Length: 147
Image (tube, rainbow, N blue to C red; front, side, top):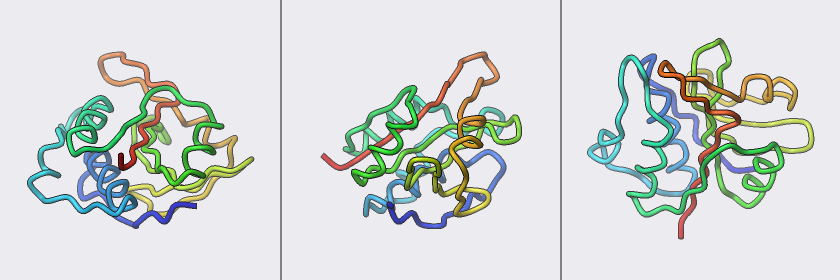
């Protein structure tokens, strides 16, 4: 299990940048306020997953992103690679960071609720998002690691 710091979002729309901070800290990297503020975050649309991927590559990390399966979460977390996932817990898109996935359980850091553990069944029901413009993010994950 990856040790994820309990960092909370400060506004309703900044779960994306907060998830990036969690991932960076889990990888042992601290980011400057200037770097953190360079990640686009809009009060209406939040942060586009493609912007997160681009930002992570820009700070020198290797990135794997796209539609994933439960087994991807198991394998990536077991290899020490945290995964930012886009979920829809209350019909609103939300970013969390997965630190561990096992046969039927997942542990993650939620920027609004803190450390969370849930079942595979509940996770799979919320692991999706359709943004305001109709882009579909089915089981979307963004994993990053040091080269």
